[in-house]
Image (cartoon, rainbow, N blue to C red; front, side):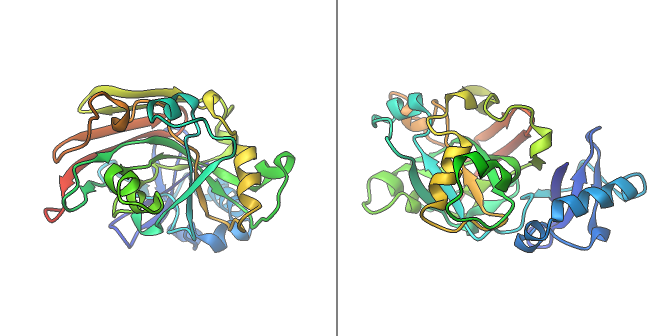
Amino acid sequence: MKLIRFGAPGTESPGLQLADGSRIDASSFGEDYAEAFFATNGLARLSAWAAENSATAPRIGAEVRLGPPITRPSKIICIGLNFSDHAAESGMAVPEEPVVFFKASSSLVGPNDNLIIPRGSEKTDWEVELAVVISKRTSYVTEANAMDYVAGYALHNDYSERAYQLEQGGQWVKGKSCDTFAPLGPFLATQDEIEDVDNLDMWLTVNGVSKQQGNTDKFVFNIPQVISYLSEFMTLLPGDVISTGTPPGVGLGFDPPQYLKAGDVIALGITGLGESSQTAVAWGTA
C-alpha cells in the first residue's frame, strides 16, 4: 500500500494512492496514520478496508495538497555521513558507528510545500534521503529481527542550515530543525511495495540542474544495522521516522559551496517512493 494524507496543513485526512496512481479518500476507515494506528496493526486493518472500499471511495484530485504521509511522530532520528562518498565531500572520516542526530518534529511538512529559508540564512542546503517509518514499539532489537519493526519507507529531504549546524557550536540539531526542513512523501510505501531497499536510485536537482545521484547500495550502515543500533539507546515508537543519510552532491560539498536562495526549485526522488518538489521562499514572505 501507499499511504497518503491530504488537505490543508493541520487538517489533513488519510488516503491511499492506488496502483494506477489514482488517490482515494480513506476517511471512512476512521483513523489517521498516527502512533496508535501503527501500534494496533493498522496496516493490516487498512489493507482489509482497502480491499472492500477502494472501488467506491471518493477520488482525490491531482490539484489537492498532499501533507506528510504520517502524523507528527514522536521523533525524527537522522543518520549522518552514512554514504562514504558524502563523508569525503564533507571533509569528515567515514564513521565507525552511526552518527545520530535529531530533527525537531515541528519541521515536518508535506512533500511539495514551500521551503522557508530561515531568517538571515545564507547556507541552507539540500539532502535527498530514504526515510524509514517504525511499525511497532521496540528496544534492543537484533539486526536479524529489525525489519519486523518497519512499517515502510518514504522520500525525505533533510534540509540543513550549515552555519547553524557546523559554525555555531553544540549539536547538529540546530541546523536541521527549522520550520519546513523535513518534507516527507508523497507517500509512505509499505515494505511489500519495495523489492530491494538496498538498491534504490536517489536523485536531486536544483532549478533543473542535477546535484545528487546515488544509490542505497552505498550505505555505510544498512537499515537493520541502524534500527538495531538506535534501539540500544532509545525506545523506538510506532510512527517514528529514521532518515538514513544522503549521497554526495550537497551544496556544502561544492567548491565553492552552493546554497539555496529564494525562488530556487528543488526536485528529488527515489525509486519506488515517488518524487517531490519544494520552492524556496524567504522567511517572512511565506
